[in-house]
Amino acid sequence: MDKKETAVMLKHSGCNCAQAVLCAFTEETGLSEEQLMRIGAGFGVGMGCMEATCGALIAAQILMGLTEFQGRPLLKAARELHQAFTDTCGASLCKDLKGRDSGVVLCECDDCVRCAVELIEKRAGEKQI
Image 1 (cartoon, rainbow, N blue to C red):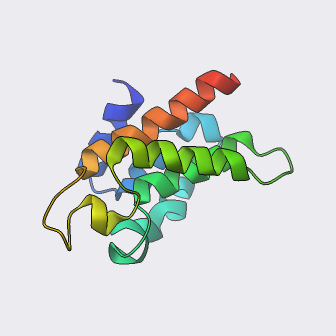
Image 2: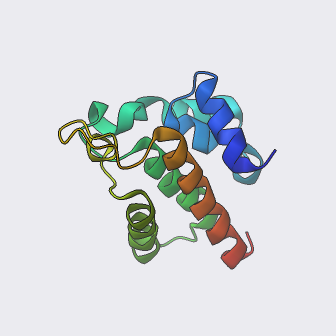
């Protein structure tokens, strides 16, 4: 099973979106699943319970830091990752993605999780991580 579908399976097994994305990369981070579950525990239903950033995107940003950090902030890379997620999913805020205020769902959680995993895999391929 590929990482995207592993992450979706984890989400359907009780993980929030952030935990699902993080745990799909246990091997690459060198952290245990328990550690990654703890790191992602506060990002269910996005940051602030739908009020802010999607948990899947948060996890992708965390993974980028865990796998690419070399003593300097990853500002440009973080901006690019955020933009790529927004371009694909239609927004970066959980409430907008889920259509909480508009009634229009831009991207389902499973697809946000898939997108986040795909973006990290693409970065890893480009960086040979």
